[in-house]
Length: 270
Picture 1 (cartoon, helix red, strand yellow):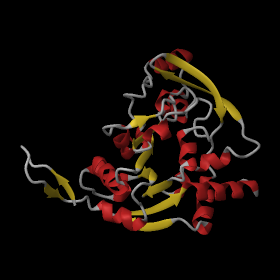
Picture 2 (spheres, one colour):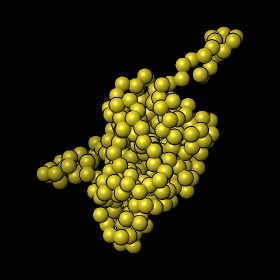
Picture 3 (cartoon, helix red, strand yellow):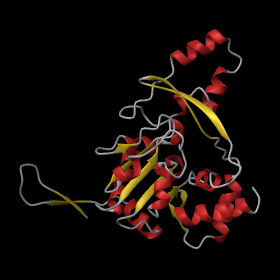
Picture 4 (cartoon, helix red, strand yellow):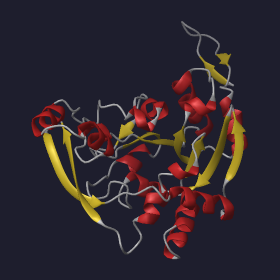
């Protein structure tokens, strides 16, 4: 049970623990863990408190020494994203220029996570005390003891690479909670991709509060993640599964999943 002081002081009163806390513990979420959560709240079903309630439950399960991490990317401010390509297809140069003039400028302190990241990512980003990396395309947010260590360093050229917060999750032996999200969306598989010798590099262009930024970084591809995910689920020893609410959930060790995916890729890209 959680406790909180009565108004005006006095004896502390008990407040109920969020029902998800026990479910998370049964799945294997332990206090002190560094936990990256990828969540579909729609798959989870009705939850007390909505996205904020889920964040509260996750933080309760992790305890004061744990760290909660979410991917808070913002493709809407990119001129090289799929979103931009779709929105500007068939437009004249003048119309494209007008569209780009109205694109949101990335500010790490205030720009919401893309809706494509899910409501939980934005709930983590906006949580009191949350820290966020400053990458204008592939930022990450974290709450907890190691939040600064996770988010402090994020070079433009390593948007989802070993020098990014995603790479830090690997270094810290983090776990990924796939909360109603299938393994074909397992973000950490990008780390395995970037270990391959034939990584291609491309140009990216995005806009922030100080104007447009252009940089070169590895080309990201996730079309084969379904095959990688199936192989990880078939062979990994550290993955646990459970039904939480109406969602199929998995707790996945980052290192084991990435190393297995790398082995698959070295045998030949699926």
